[in-house]
Length: 76
Image (cartoon, rainbow, N blue to C red; front, side):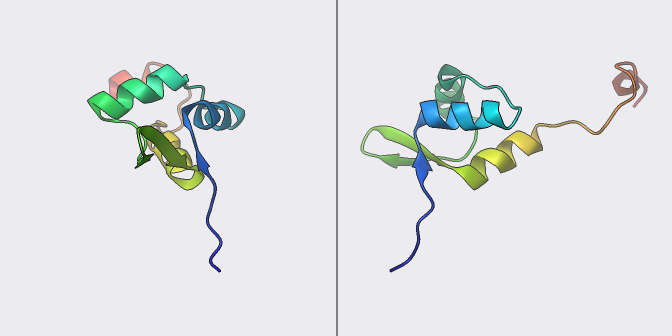
């Protein structure tokens, strides 16, 4: 039998992201699922479910390069 990684509903996905330092409300995940730009998800019936690895990859992809000041973004 293959081991399947647990799938997280939006509330659990939001809690995981917050625990990792990426606060994101369940409502934000729902909006991004409709508009695009959010983490990859699968559907089970009408329910969106997320894999931990997809959530982490999405959150990390939204990080900027390290900066020493806010003005560094303007200089680039």
